[in-house]
Image (cartoon, rainbow, N blue to C red; front, side):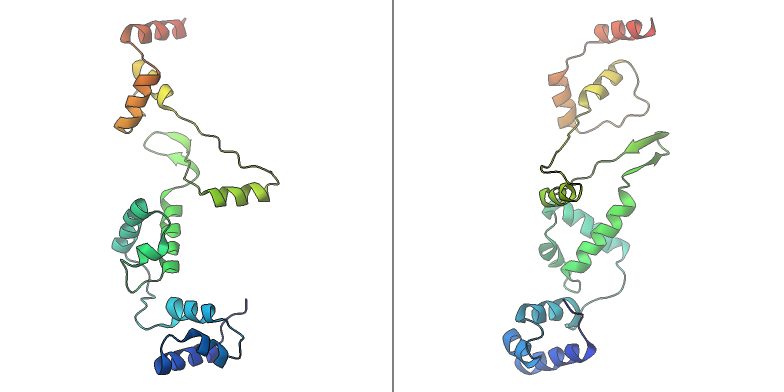
Amino acid sequence: MEKWSSQEDAVVIKLYEVCGPQWVTISRTLGGVKSAQQCSQRWHSALRSGINKSPFTTFEHDTVRRLYEVHGPRWARISSYFPDRTPNMIKASREETQVEQEPFFGYNPKTGMESLIVVPVSKSSAQQSADRAGRKEIDFNRSNLVRVVLQLKALGETTFLDSGSPAQLMEGLMVVPVSKSSAQQRAGHLEA
C-alpha cells in the first residue's frame, strides 16, 4: 500500500466538499490508484475537520482504560465517546498506557519480589505468536494460584499477598478446605 501524497489528500478534501462521501467517485478521480474504501478511511482517520491530533490527556487515557474494561478492543465503539479522536488513536492510547502500566516482568517494590504479569491475549494474537514460533497449535498454559495463596494465608504468610477478588477466594475455599489445625500441623512439618 502506497503512502498518501499531499496532492491526493488535497483532491480528497476538495471533492468531499463538493460531492460529499461519494467514495467511488473520489477514487475514480484519483485515477483508481486508491480504492473507495481507502479514500473513506483516509478521510475519517486523517483528513476530516475536527480531529484532535494533540496528545491524550490523563483524563482521556483513564477514560479509554475504563471503556476498554467494558467494551474490550472495540476501538470504533470506544471512539464514539471521543468525537474528535479516531479508532486508531484510541487503540494507540490503550497500547501506550498498557505498556506503562503492565510490564511483563519486573521488580515490584511493594512486595520486594520479581514478578511475571500475565496479560490477556486474543486468540488471533496467540495464533500469530504460535505461527512465528513454528508451532502448529496454540498452547494456553493457565495457572490458578488460589490454592497456594490460601495455604500461605493459613500458614500466616500474608505480608506480601493482596486479598484477591471474593470470587477467587470462594473458589479456593471450595477447592482446598484448610482448617487452622491442619495448617499448624503443616507448619510444624515444614520446620522439622
